[in-house]
Image (cartoon, rainbow, N blue to C red):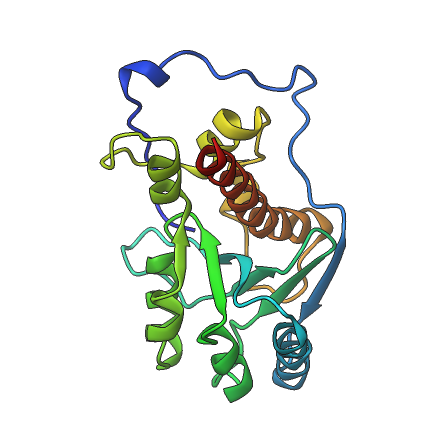
Length: 224
C-alpha cells in the first residue's frame, strides 16, 4: 500500500491496450482469512510445510499490506497482510488487534527460501517491523520489486517508477480495481466485507502474476 507514481519514457507514452470489457483482474481462488493469533500461527505453519516440502530452491509469493488511512500524517498500525502462494490460494492475516505476531509467522516472512513479489513492498515490510517490533531483514533482502524487475527485464531506464495499475495495463493488457472507497476503507475492522476481501486478495495475486509474466519474458529473452 505504498504511494504509486509513474513517469513514462517517450517510447511508452502510447495508450496501453486494455481489455475492452473493462473487466478488472480478480482473484478466483480460495481466500483464507484469520483474525486470531492461534489461526495466524496455524496458517503460517501450513505455508511453511509447503515451502519445506517443495523441491524448488526458492519460492516466490505475492505480497501486499493494508492499513487505515489517516489525514494527520501519522499512519495507523498495519491492519492486513496479504500473501498469495499460487493461483488458487491467498491468505489474509488480520493483525490490527494482535499485539505480538507469533514467532512462526515472523520465521515465515524471513524464510531464506521465500522471495516476496510486490510493488514498493520494501517500505511495507519496514512498517511491519516497526509496528510489531520484529526483525524483517530476511524479508527485505528477498524482495522482488516489480517496478525494478520490469525495468531490468524490458531494458527500461532504471529511474522509471511504476504503479501496480500501470504494470497490469502495460504487461497484461488488463485493468485493476483501485476504487478509492475500497482502497481507503476501514481496514482495521476485522469483519471485512466481500469486496474488501476480494480487493485485498487480488492485489497479492496480481503481485504474483506480474512476477510470473516477467520471469517468462526474461527466460524467453535468455533463450533467444
